[in-house]
Image (tube, rainbow, N blue to C red; front, side, top):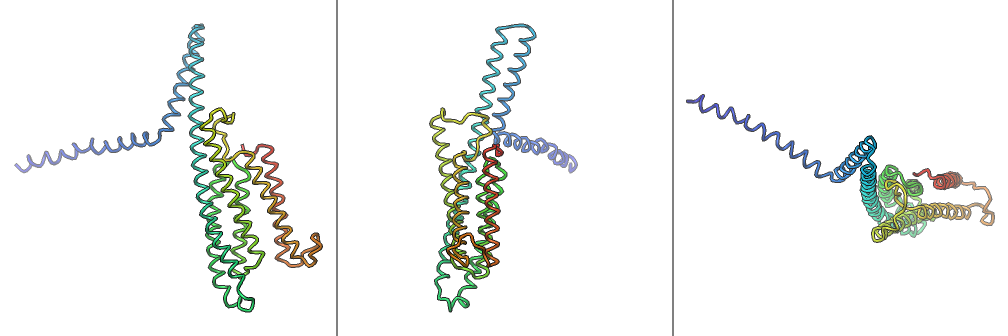
Length: 309
């Protein structure tokens, strides 16, 4: 009796095997459902293949009417695939624009706080600065380094996206400025030079946020007026347009000019802006500006030659 009772129990795992396989099948189905974009692309590609096969068959049979019909079907399938790819690229760009704008807004808020605290520390009487500035300045340096990490992550996103030239360069220069500010704050340098670099960081963030907002507005306008869609491969749609890129390059150049003038005022002879800097820190700063000038020339050339495409 016991063995008879046990047999159905032994059979239960066997009964359960199909049940165990079922979740796997459901999981595969769910995965397919979770990627409707791939399904749409594959369906459009399948229609193209079928239309191409019908066209080839009609050509072999010399059926003119069937050839024409097959060509129309092929063109329609191609148009559908392009529409799907354009829509997917638009969605990808929209997500990236919103993601970057949100990230840069948070960075701007944090940078503004660092700047305000730097100005506040600089207002401490000179004879009290040695005792009252280093510790809070060091805390600010830690906060600034966190923003360096945020800039690194934004830069990785932009380089992976790959369609912009001026944006990654702006973030890269801003990141270097942030690192420089962190080092200066660690050394309790809270004066006008540090504040000036912080102001440049703030300006960079504000300009990028403005460019991202404009790009999102342009996309919304294109959605409302499909005739304004830019021509070309739908997958080539850039993160921001060429005008926005040029504006950002111009802003980079303006910052180099402003900082050059700022450093010129720190030279021994304020009336001789072409004079030689004697302070080692200033010499290094001017060398960095020279490197930036070269980078601006390079990215302008890359943009003109279309190397972001």
